[in-house]
Amino acid sequence: MLILVLGKGKTGSLVAEVARERGHGVRALDITENLHASALTAPALAGVDAVIDFTAAEAAVENMRAVLALGSRIVVGTTGWYAHLNEMKALAIRREGGLLYGTNFSMGVQKLFRLTAELARLEGYTFSIAETHHTSKLDAPSGTAITLQQIVEAAQPGAKVEVTSYRVGDAKGEHIVTAAGPDDVLEIRHDAHSRRGFALGAVRGAEWLAGKQGAWDFREIFEQL
View (cartoon, rainbow, N blue to C red):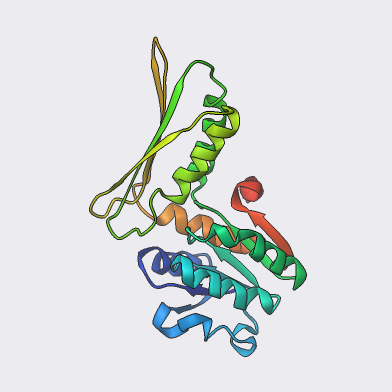
């Protein structure tokens, strides 16, 4: 495969490295090289099997519009853009492109989502979520924390789950779901030691997306990888 990586930050650079390790051809652009999606033209995407975006929310929306309008395929690991999700899904379907998105591409976090859904079935408990990321992360709460919040609130109608966000140093990402009851407390915790799990999941997602048309949440397909 030929993969185009958008974003040369810490995660984007690791995505490119993992993709090369898995035998793929890789091109990479940073935001200055692709201002307002200007580099995402039909000639530039010719032969590209999948684009992987780890940029910023505003840039990701512009990138998706450009890639999907050409009927190409894009994996989006950027968060904070979900107000445009329905628009992007519709564009992917209308132009016969492919969109794979997710608040977290770590396989461990996908299991965290499943375990949280099970924990959230408990009655008589108060749920809360805490998340910690690096100081340069712009969105708070994190997309992963919002997903966890949605999972719990779907299982606890009428409940409002508090999310507390911390920004510390170069923290890779920690999420803790707490269920506090009158007699005990339960916690589920995922702590990323590196960004490699996110990068690997995104590359495996791109491998899965190649040749497909439609739009999928990573949570829907991760067990197929």
